[in-house]
Length: 229
Image (cartoon, one colour):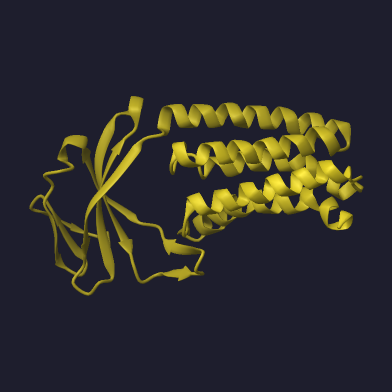
């Protein structure tokens, strides 16, 4: 039991790094990484973090050098992980991300070694937290999607999206997603990144007219757009 608990820093570091790493891999090949449910994922991750951290403190486990290094890495990884969850729904996921960061902070201050790495990790984590707050304050907005319009052969789906991003203002955009290209692994999937076809004022959202002329030509407000361009 203690041996398993001693692996807590590695386990949590891997879990915290999973979503950011998948996003990076997907982006490198032109795909979006999509979880089946952000809310369920972060709740499960938080429960695992709380249980393992509680057992770690209860059994007063002594870590080897490798695990001590991962104890230092877990906090910055947990904050980076938060960047991928906060924008989805601040009210529902914010508290869980903060709990994950709290668990990682306990590991950092209780068990991380060497001291120099511990200090560097703490400084980087504080800077990342500051950037996370700035990121939320200036870019967090409300996205509303209406009128998903499927192409004649059902290869593409055009989405009209209204974005309200506080100080950055709002806009109406049209994105086209390829619904047949992707890898579905049940709890998550890699889908081809949608192509931005049109961007306009936020006031266009409700009255925009959109339809397909053929499989590769989208008509937006009576103007044709070839999605292959």
